[in-house]
Image (tube, rainbow, N blue to C red; front, side, top):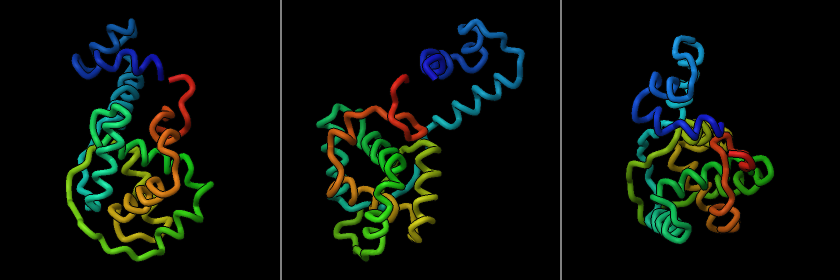
Length: 169
C-alpha cells in the first residue's frame, strides 16, 4: 500500500503506463496493469445525493475545520469508516437508533463525494438495519458519532479504506 500511495501522483497525472514506468515495473503484464486500474477505480470518488439535517452538515463542517480536513465530505468519509470499523461492537446502539423514527428538522439535499468502499458499506448498513435509504444509514451513523463517539478517536486516528486502524500506511 505504501508503494501505491507513493506513486499515486504519477498515476493520476500520467496514467497507468507512466506509473508503471516510473516505478521501474514492466508495463506489459496485463494483470499488474489491471490491478492498478482496479485499485485506482476503487479510490475514485463518486458523488451521491444525501439528504441530511442542517445540524449534521454543520457538525461535519465544524469537525473538518477543527481537525484541518479539506472538506466536510472528508469528515463524512472518516465517520463512515469509523462506523465500519466498530459496527459489530456497537451493533445494539445502531439498532436502537435505526428503530427510532426521526423526522428531519431541516433537511438539506446535497451531493457528497465518497469512495466505493463507503458506498458499499452504506448499502450493507441500510440492509442490515432495514433502513429505507442511504440517507437514513448516514443519519444513524452521524447520530451515533455525535452523541456517543469521542471526537479525537474519530478524527485523530488514521484509518485505511478497509476500515482497520492504520499502522503502516
